[in-house]
Length: 241
Image 1 (cartoon, helix red, strand yellow):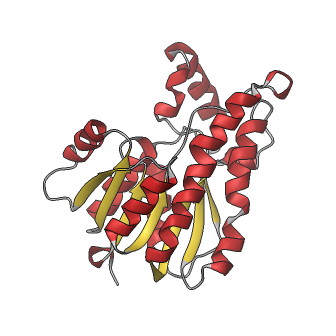
Image 2: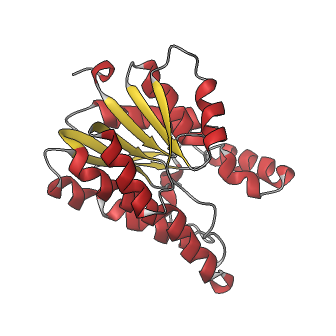
Image 3: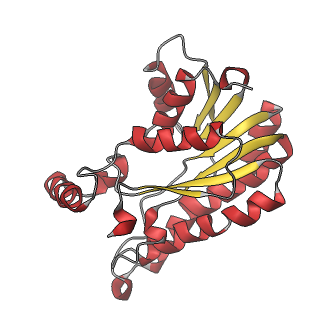
């Protein structure tokens, strides 16, 4: 069954990796529902895709289970779920790490993705798929990222078990590396540019990632019905360093 016959929900689809994923799916003819917390931001994002795209929007706060339950009940059914929900907290040297910020990092990424996945299960077509977005920080043991490793490692550790529990539906994750998205906007522009330069010089592919790179990895997992229980690194080779 081609994607033009299928419905895909992208949670967190108004910017960055989420919006790039919406764009890629729409280009393949899927009927896409993009969610976010800000109606205006969603409207502007989807408006940039053009009138031919089969994309609708829904305001959903994935931190609130009642909002998720109401949303999926309204959808009635879906073929694929992509979870790009994230937050910006949890990084820093462990000895000085703000554990309250780390807790907020879990509340903004781990719990919303897990709550959304659980809320969607009753409405997911048998043989459909769920794709989480984790991070290569879960596996590279880089100083200063223990908190991020905890958040993303918790997500990625569940993928194999969920793939068995929810079969024949498939469960996978994409594990991005350094990707040029608004996640980095918390850094001063000059510091961000220098970090990106250093990372690009070190990576085997010679550049940092773009949101479209990750979206293409998501598309592969959504379309390939013979892949499940897989955490796909999309990091330019960062895990090799």
